[in-house]
Amino acid sequence: MGLAHEVAIVGVGMTRFGENFEQSYFDMVVEAGYAAMQDAGVEPREIEAAWLGTAYAYDYTTEGNAGTSLAEPLGLYGIPITRVANYCATGTDAIRNAALAVAAGEYDVVLVVGAEKMRDVPPRGSLVQTHVSRGHPLYCKGRTAPGMFALVATRYGAAYGLNIKDYMADVAVKNHYHGSLNPLAHFRKPVTKEQVLKAPAIADPIGLFDACPTTDGSAAVVLMRREVARARGKSYSVIRGIGLSVDSGYFSAQMDQTFDYLGFKATQHAAEKAYKQAGISNPPEEIDVIELHDCFTITEIVNYEDLFLCERGQGWRLAAEGVTRRDGKLPVNTSGGLKSCGHPIGASGVRMVANIHDQLLGRAGKMQIENPKVGVAHNLGGPGAVGCVVVLGREQ
Image (cartoon, rainbow, N blue to C red; front, side, top):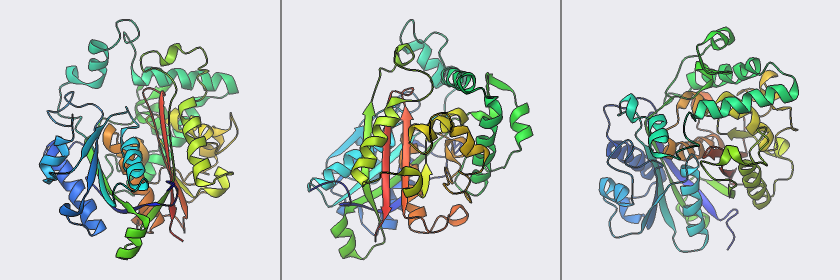
């Protein structure tokens, strides 16, 4: 039994993404998990296996290091539960593992929950501090996520003769506008291009509005064999393809002599695998809506190219010409993306798949686009070492 077209997403649920100081890790898992089960019309006793996506267990909370962190809050005992961690691709990889188990015929009904609690720490407990204090003694000194992607932005602008800040600002304005339409986004206010360009610098050319916030959140999906979903009479989307690729080390990613700072092989290879499985040969014409990894605005521009939505060196045009706006030819990050939703690492990929599912079922509210049939969710992590691409389709 192949994966393509055999696995259905039947229910989704998620918390608000933001500074959820009033919620514990367990609280968020319960809210998202039960919402997904309710949406799917299943009881906890019907879940045959589950996967938990949490990237940084024990860095921010006391939970998330094993399947017990899903079993306990949801009362899912007596079944296999696996914890998945794969940097920023954690959520989509958890769905990948669950989908493969369903496609293999091992289970009929499974649950995936992604969760990350990142705000309940002081500055010296942040991801930056953890990176420096626990990471490689040479490569991690002075290395931050904004700094790494600032190098990509600088290289991209120099290679193509662009004032790259101007085009990064187009992405920020778009995604903040989309976020204003999403009731669960961390940031829900539009910004102007002038505001973006005048914002304080973080790591030039990346400014304040070019970076996603540090966020809490949880998202969940219920997967079924397609025939089981059909027999139950539930509305569903179908997983048409999933690709995952690991193309460098974590600490040594920037030392890879084949890395040109103009694109990420992990995304390219994951996209090739997912598109081949889904039967997609012309992505810009065959894909209707995309949730892609925009941890920084330059990342979205580069990802346009790595996902084969345009030619190399042309990603900036898609944002500048409005192609990727909600009302454009190829809407990207109609949820607001990581830029507005925030990036609770283990939850982000699951949230992206849930957003695409809602688009395909026509229930995305103010974020809805017209008549989408095929959607893509994409994560890039580690930093740029891991890529995962999920292709979803509306059941015909």
